[in-house]
Length: 357
Image 1 (cartoon, rainbow, N blue to C red):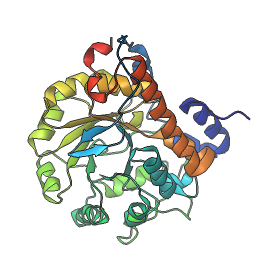
Image 2: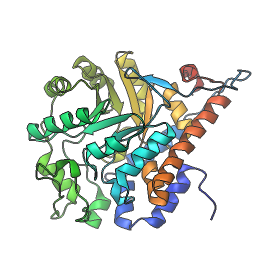
Image 3: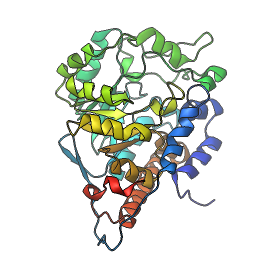
Image 4: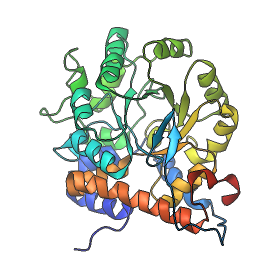
């Protein structure tokens, strides 16, 4: 069998490898999945206007983000339950990220504790936080992440309740008993409940996550840590500006991969509005639908500081474990490098708005 040559090849093979309920959990979105499809389609509808006769024999993919120089502008998005994709789970994906020059974001809902993920990391490591009704649990998670050496925190704000993920409802999706939410075991919340007409993750969210999170809480979260805080789940310019006003170091333009509110805007469609509202006062990242190196370039041209990639990394893990995840990230990196060369951009700083129509 021929080796996969792009991310979509890995997705096709992952569908054959993974149990249906697991593939559906990773791949599906909310409602009719309009937003899932729109995320990728919106990138494809943008076209590029390359420059020619620019020397591009030497190219530099590095960026400076949150005060640190990173090898590439590619960040692995936070994703739950990675051992469902492969037994190595987050240990395999964090190693793959480091080898490919990508930043890794560990999820609150990981199947591996943050301390073990940090010990395996060879590149930049961030942490993603869900806010629990029990603020003591929330505070402890932040402290553990900082002590483990995480360099930034993403505060997810678009899950006051879980979106209606119909595939998970049909499959009555729940974690197998051998897998738990490891970071929450000590607090007694490691196991997902078996839902009554809802999925395990949906019931877990309903019972434990804080649905009353508000702007007044952002200052408190920023006060808990020396890590820069990114507010993840922003789709509006006014919300982005308010996040910065309340102490955030930046925002992540995200619709949760289409898994929360169906028919919400494709992220690339609102990126320019958010960038304008932030007005260089903080970082602006974007995720949702990034499947090609040209997508990375388009996002940066529209003002993103970096991009986040989620599902493709899991497809790589499912197909080939750590080596598969590494190869997926290398493909995206190499496609991005190729797009930079063909657009006449030897450095990321030369990826400007006029390249995109």
